[in-house]
Length: 192
Image (cartoon, rainbow, N blue to C red):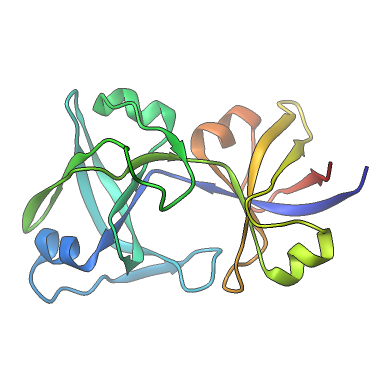
């Protein structure tokens, strides 16, 4: 069985906003303020945060990620869903149909998202060159092995191929904590 190593990136709860929602929450003509670049080229964490308000509770200080997207999307962990009282599906980013909505509050306004709350499926970003090198295809699933005292198998890792991506395996903080992972740690990927 062939293997290769990839770095892991641990993602906390966050929100992606459309330009319309950025302006509704932060003011007309508002532009997001980059705080730091993320592992994927062109993606960044913003200085701006919002409050998510669900049927059961709220979560303050939720980081906005940029740049603006076509549709707003909230990515929560399973633990977060209990706080807000929602049961979102585990989905690939951008697959929002049939997902629950939530209220979002910013310093200049409040919006109601009809849909867009998901638990992000664990996934492996790679370029077409990486995919060719490892004989993988977009949409395929692989497994990654975590070594160490809380080691185990990350199964059903979705492969996402795009020329704009950098090689990185993304999990959320629930998964990172369960396996004792650290950002940048190398995981071994097994090809079936």
